[in-house]
Every structure is written in structure tokens, then in C-alpha cells.
Image 1 (tube, rainbow, N blue to C red):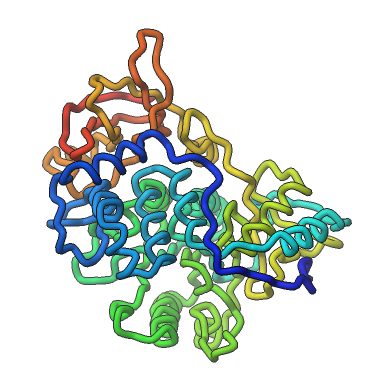
Image 2: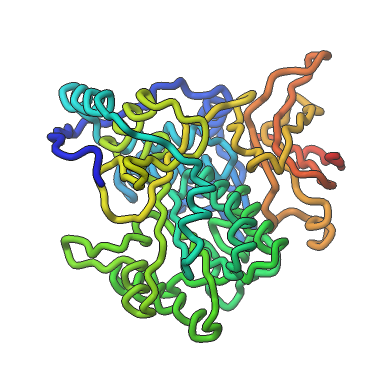
Length: 446
């Protein structure tokens, strides 16, 4: 059932600018990049990357994207540039700025259309909301394959998928197929690091992978290794075939698939493109349960969806991830029938500049780290055991959490930073704006 039917779509070519002001650390980073030559900066760089010289460097793509904005806007297009920068701010642990950059690439919505959307949302009646995690648990009961998606710049989606892992494991799901996993010969799927996959380098993605390994899931990399040269149809068909190989090897397999955007659509596109989920269904004969997170998370995927989300969450004050129901049946708020279920995430709440959903459903606790020096720009927490297993170096490891957003000051006036950490031992790395390590600190979270 579709809720937003019949609205006239009037989209202008004006760009949307984020309503919130740029944070002080981002202003500092912008000023540094314009005024100085960042360490490792190359004016010849033609693509934004997180892994220069074979190591992870979380500020490297931001240096280049901020210093050479005009060049990369030409290389990527305006929207492509903002999408890329949004993803790299998310990698660095700055969710607020990631959202700000994301919406800069959207077309704006005229006031007339905005008013129509708000009126439509305000007139909705009979809508109830179910806890998304519990509803998915029930919906997956007789399913062999569950597919859920994400937007690259929104680690919140990975956090929600992580919250499903234990329930699904108890239901017999033993395979977790992640589009983000490295599918080349140098892959590393038994532990978390740079070679696990490019997007695994985002800290919440790292936590998703760690949790799956701890629970006993078999991790499956299924991305098309020739995706850079294949057409969209070819890529999705290869992904589907790779997933079907699991069923060929294990006829009783139950699989959770975490993919990006519309790969999990079960509808053929108007241009004839067959998405991965539909290709898999045709190939295996198994209809997957498909769950969208991307349309109804704050800022959505596009300008129109952004206004729908704002209007809907103004009308309905949801407090947790939810499924909208009408007459006890799930409904899709954004007028799409591509997926079985649509998760509606509430607007993010922040504590000292960090999203509170980083507690990962209560499995991590807020931990304040005091800065030892005014030169500190970035604070990172790595698992002590992973550091020890990697020759005591972090160069190719993924932190449990990191931030450059100050979380106020302690009683002595020292700047502190808020990290979300599970119980355990960590090694804190304090870096300056050049990404140089200033000092380290072992801590234990009890």
C-alpha cells in the first residue's frame, strides 16, 4: 500500500545547502587545507582515496577534497563530489557533517510542493508503528534469504543491521554476505582490517564485521570483481550468481545479505535493468525478504524524499527504528513498491557532538577521553588485541571509534572527546591535524 500517491513533483535545479553551521573542527580543517600544504598532499591526485601508499589515512581524502574542491567537482560532477565527501566525513566519524555534505548535492523542492507533502502527511490517519527489529524477526521466520540495504554515508544503517545479527543467528541464519567485503585474492575475512574491504574501514562497518565473526557467521564476499568495467546489469547478475553459490554448496543455508541502495529491489527498472535481488530470485527460485533503510532515514536519498521524511517525522514522533503499518500491513511511505519493508529511522539525537545510536543498541558505552595536548585534532580507539596482532601498529587497522569533535571540557579545563566503546582494552591514538601520532594511551573500559 502506498501513502504518498498523487503528489505533483516540482523540482528546481537550485542546490540545497545544509541548515546547520559548519562545525569548528571542519572549519579548522578547511582553513588548514587552504592555507598550508597537508602532509602527503599531491596536486596530481585524480581520485579521492582512503588508502594512500597501502595504509589507511582517514584525513587524506578530506585534505584533497577540501583543498582541490573545484578540480574534484569537475572530475566527479557536483553531486558526485558531495556524495564522495559525505562518505569520507562518515569514515572519519563525523556523521553530522556527512549529512550536511550529502544534501548539498540534492535538487531543492519548491515551496508549493513542500506544502503539499506536509499537508498529505498531516492528513494521514490509521497509521501505527511497529518496532522494526521485532517486526523483521517475525517477517524472517519462514525465509531463507533476507536482504537489507544501506547508504554509504550513513553508518546508522550498519548499526541497525548489527542489531539484527543475534536474533537472526538464533533463527538459523549462518551466512552474512556483505557487499562491502573484499572479493579479491588478498581478502581477509577472519579479522577486521584494510584488506577486509574498503568500506569496512568505516568504524561501524568494522564493528558489524567483528560482531558477525564473534557470533559465528560465515562471512561471504559476493561483489563483482569486474564491476568497474561491467554494466549495471552485468554487475548485479554476477552478485546474484555469487550469492547463489552459497546455496549450491549448502542446500539448507539461511543468508543475511547487506547491500547498498537499490541492489535489493525486486522490481525491474523501466530501462530494463534487473537488480541483484530480482536476479537472485530468478536464479535460485527463492524469493528474498527485502528491507529498505535508505529512503526513510534523515535526509533520505534525494530532495523529494528528504521533505517526505521531514513531514512524516513531524507528524509521527517515532523514538526508534520502526515499520509503518496500515490495517496491520506494512506500508511504504515514499510511494515505492521496490521492497517488502521500509525501516523508518528517527532523527538522530546527539551527545556532545556524537550520535547516540553509536552505542549500538546498548552494547557500547559513552567514554570520555581527555586530550593531552592542544595540538590534538583526531582521537582514535583501537582494540589492544588487534594492535598486538598487527606488530603493534595501527596502519592497516580499523578503529572501534574515532572523532575530531570535542565533547566539552573536564573540570580542569582540558578538552575531552566522546567515544563509544565496548568493554575491553584499547589503545588510544592522539593525532594532530597532519595525522602525525602525538602520543598513545592504553585504557580499559569496564
